[in-house]
Image 1: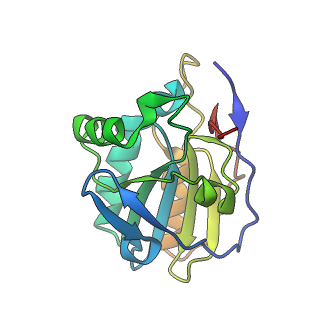
Image 2: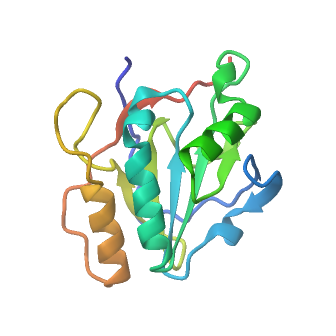
Image 3: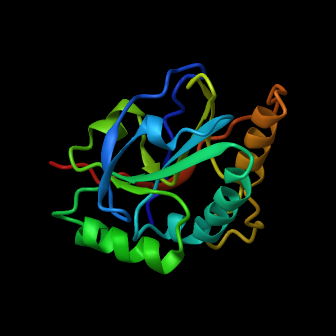
Length: 185
């Protein structure tokens, strides 16, 4: 399996706006509609990537825990569905229902939003503060498929705790590693 790292968008970057089709609700949802009062997590994921499959349970757990702490969540799939039909909106909807996603699962058909976020891989995580400024980007934790390290969301959880507690995040922000986004040709 390919191992592509995050591009590590500069901290302080303003969250790119979007309005994308939510495969769960069949409605268009904007960044403003998913914002939390304390911050917002944007995740680039897809249905078939083994790195995403590995972390699905933890991202669901984190979203359920931190939603009640004023953090908004959304997942975006930007993959080329012509060459990767398993990531089609219909399959995204079925996957989200099967996994029990407690957040919108948005389809970036044009891939413009992935480009605006400089997303490179799945999964790729971005945390914005209440002023929509980037305060964290990178990995969920050190766990990868088959590396034996515990799946605990430590890096993302720490970033969210620092945000909520208004503390500086002093931990090294490591790039996420995963499958590359499947760009259209």
